[in-house]
Length: 121
Length: 76
Image 1 (cartoon, chains in turn cyan, purple):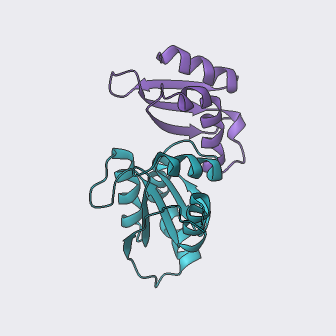
Image 2 (image 1 turned 90 degrees about the horizontal axis):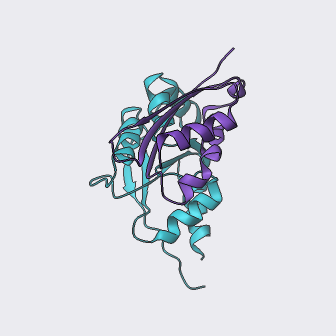
Image 3 (image 1 turned 180 degrees about the vertical axis):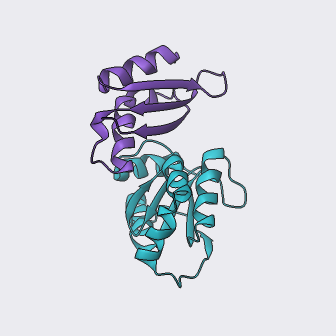
């Protein structure tokens, strides 16, 4: 599977996907940390993908999303935005409402990390 | 990337815009831009930020903006 397909699968299949620099345990960038914190505080389940291991990941991601910066947050396959939007929507309460709407209020909050690597077909 | 260049790109993209650019670290590559413009009317936050990102596409892609924070506001 190509890298782009793998990225697309994560975006489409995960309830909330975030592409960050580093890992949730060790974010390598303040903006990635801001977005992770806002998501977590809003009660989101989080699937994190580190873009740092391979520069191609970021290139393919940006080609798919038409969004130039990292982090990028997707809810049910749709781009929510970067760190600024995620924080803004958390602060206004809109993020929690949106998550309630699309994932239900009884959602389980888990944090997982997924690696994307191109595989030979 | 001087602040003035970023401001000029934003003012070109948002002729009615009230534009503010802050160099967050003094290192000339971490910026916070705030734009108030009528162009944002009816657009979602993602779409508003897309317009700002598009105006700054060149400095974003050549790496002269290392980090960009965006605040957008509508305007009568």
